[in-house]
Image (spheres, helix red, strand yellow):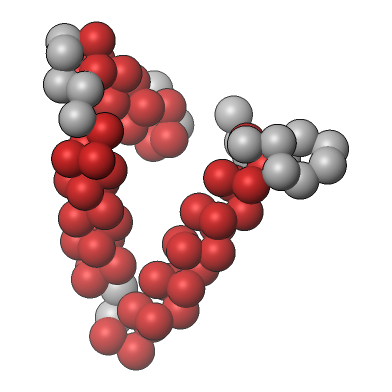
Length: 77
């Protein structure tokens, strides 16, 4: 196990993909459910900010890793 949650999640996803669990829409749906569970761990007064931050980071990272933003990805890994 890594100290990096991002790396651990990606390893689990990769293992499922390699086993043939290749329904990417279903995998994305399960990850979205996990993100919703994470947001719900926050105090109710903070949930909207946590959700907004997560969605903003998601969009930024997709653009960076997809090459839509000049300079490449600034993501951690």
